[in-house]
Length: 385
Image 1 (cartoon, rainbow, N blue to C red):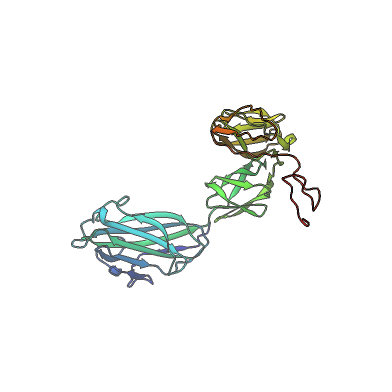
Image 2: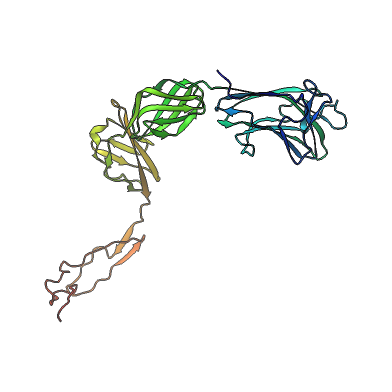
């Protein structure tokens, strides 16, 4: 595959070769003393945690391909450049950007975790997928620690970009899903850093590797699968679809019962014929079936989940039912319990025990038959006397 960015430079001739030195630390300069390769390297004195930076010119136009960056570097003591700097004091950061002012993307870090102290030069290599557009490179060096005083060498920078291989789709499962949403698993090659659309609808990817994509597809989304990566775009030959499951309606959206008692049956009022399997979670505290209804005997407030499935067609619908368990009120005593009352007499009733509320209707004639009459003590009247 043809390289889009292909650059190599080693500061063998005078000057910085259009590279620019920036930062609070000492400037980078061409140096012929103990170079990494050839007759010269660029060096900078970093000390007291100041950061020195070296920025490239535009190295070419990237197509968003795979970049291999290689360069030589070393970190030595300022007082004697034949003495290796301690690894704990070394910090080299490499960034790329599509404009000389950034924003910058970190592509490599060298520090005490991966640097081996040496008075000689080390070849560092890193691979990354570039952002399409102009290609700028920046080195940032720092001497870690308030008393550190180092000389950094950078030499023989090589940047080679190759086009990424186009993605392929080997298979996807299932081909059809009947639920409020469906999980599709797509296998293939070169699928890293992908975006996914089905029938033109963007779909959020759950997991993404070079050989597999897993995504949750909402109901109603159907069509061919389209995958786009930095290497290109691929479209499936067959469509994928998520069908909305048939509606299932229960006689109530929630259930209330008293402690130690069973609820009234919760029945299916529509959609029962579309499913042949009904599973409650949790399974304890609920019994019954789709024909006679489901009875709850929970001992604590619980949200039950009903999963209804058509095992032949694969359709699934899920309904949540909150069940509230109320405390049984204490016993109420009415005294006297069965009094005999003479006509016209008043009998006082005394209620004791738990508090309770209730409503009652006294008499039957509480509606006035006309606008001007009031035949009973509970009559309303208007428009006359």
